[in-house]
Image: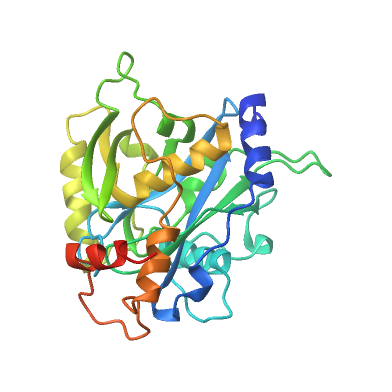
Length: 302
């Protein structure tokens, strides 16, 4: 199993050195805090890949969509990274402690990026981590795609899959015209770039639930229909997840994407305005969703 190639090693070094600006995450009430895990690892060529999920169709939010492992915070004392690791365990079975991982795997917390604002009024902190598969002290080596990824348990999602990390900066028009589509829309009272990436996956490389329950069945059957008769089905990564992937890749590779994009990272300014107007209250009601009117009021605040 190759270690990180030079490009990947430089990307990981940049992520380790990245210091995000002050965040509003700690000012948000517990009911509004969430975190996701951007888990990177080296493939057989030493290039970086990222672990993603397909959310079960019956989940209360973002059902049937590709996502990063993650969810809401349990307590104010829980750090975003702790939230992301706990949720990754609950969703995909990734152990929370390195001691529970098979040797030589361990997870290194690299950095956190500015918080993003979900339509469901959650303040979402991306936590970036590296899955090490080589032990410098013992020279033990393993292939995550053989020894770990296939053994994950899709507990609360319909599937676990991976995607090439650096490709979230690329259009790939000549080599893969189906990879990227993008368009501008109105969100946060400003122009917001909507990214859509169509990740090719082979059925044998997708981790599906070991004990399928009713909540996972519907989307799982849809995914399997999509895969029938195709050498490589495609899972769509879009919305906030796609934007976070683009931002993390921009930091990692010190490059701007080949497509148009929003220049700022995250939504800290808008989150600050919404907190000032009391929109992100501690009492979270089922079906909470930001409207254009909320955004207009918040945009007027300095």
